[in-house]
Amino acid sequence: MNIHFISIGGSVMHQLAIALKRKGYQITGSDDEIFEPAKSNLEKEGLLPSVIGWFPERITGALDAVLLGMHAKADNPELIKAKELGLPIYSFPEYIYKESQNKTRVAVGGSHGKTTTTAMLMHVLKNAGKSFDYLVGARLEGFNQSVDITDAPIIVCEADEYPASAIERRPKFHFLFPHIAILTGIAWDHINVFPTFDNYLEQFRIFINKIEPEGYLIYNEGDQTLKDLVASIGRKDIHYYPYSVPSYTISNGETRVCIEGEETALKVFGNHNLLNMHAAWLVCKQLGISAKAFVHAIGSFTGAAKRLELLSKNNTTTVYRDFAHAPSKVKATIDAVKEQFPDRKLVALLELHTYSSLNEQFMTEYKDVLNVAEEAAVYYSKHALELKRMPELKKEMVKAGFGKENLQVLNQKQELEQWLAERQFDNSVVLLMSSGNYDGMDVEAFAKHITKVGG
Image (cartoon, rainbow, N blue to C red; front, side, top):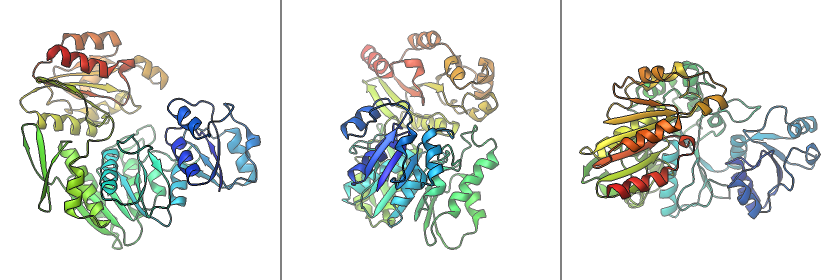
């Protein structure tokens, strides 16, 4: 196969390019900007474009396929040339399906928990000695890449609902046609793409209808919206497996879980992680893994990057970082920490960074999500609003939306630094939630500083 990547420098695209090169394909690519770590990764594999930019002359009839990244625009000159030549043009998920038509396809969808559930599956499959390909949205311990395509009989895919490419606006998860599908829950997100909840919900209906006949739908029965959707589908040619929080105990900050009589201590915690784990178990069961093997493996799972990631701790203070930004994710994360450490003060800092979270009309979706935190602040950067070409977001609208009386709302970095400097962190759990970087704040240095001072 001779394949050209338009936008080869994308975080996932460049890893697919590397995987296909290692599989023996001839790979070329272009991009108008390539940042680290993609730049170094491509360079090591001999795939870094010699010149940055778009070159339509690279698009010839000798190509078997052109892969179009999310960052490429519809007027990209290489894309235009590929269309003129009538070449096969694929979005990322369309090509993943092309490479996996003879595999057992597992797709993990839902508004939250996709990355962690996918990571749990990968961790267990690897420990069980199963050969499999994968696609996941984070760097995972024990895996060199976030994408791998080989001749393995199974592929595990994190399946999100964001558009596939600049010319294919349908969600990525509509192109995977799974034999085994997970849906973790439905909570309205990506309002710049799905302007109404009904429009968002419809994408999940379509996904369920794309499960292969005699396939499996594993779904969170505790999510009423999802439960109602599943009940309305009416497909009788697939198997349904609802799941819930499995049996567990918490003692001295340690969570223990029991699956079909097999018990283990976990390195992760929280009901959302227990739900993710139960979903992963039901998939593994279909793939022939025993409860004993699953429990043995899951006990050593430490989590995906930035998902309740322990940054630093001492005897009195523990600091976690989490990717949570959508309302349902924030509530799940904060509730998990409070349950795990009921006798400690919870200090929560949430950064609003995405298009949805910075939208005034969306703010009421955050009502009460921070209520269990004794001290909480919400930070957003005026610069982030400018970059997204969004209107001013007034502090009082943010506070009203969250509905928490003592909430601090900050929109300048100096205010953020002052709020943190004024806090007392003894006997506390500090939870830093963001899909951004707090305007460049070094959160790891901050975590080490307060645990050193407090210890």
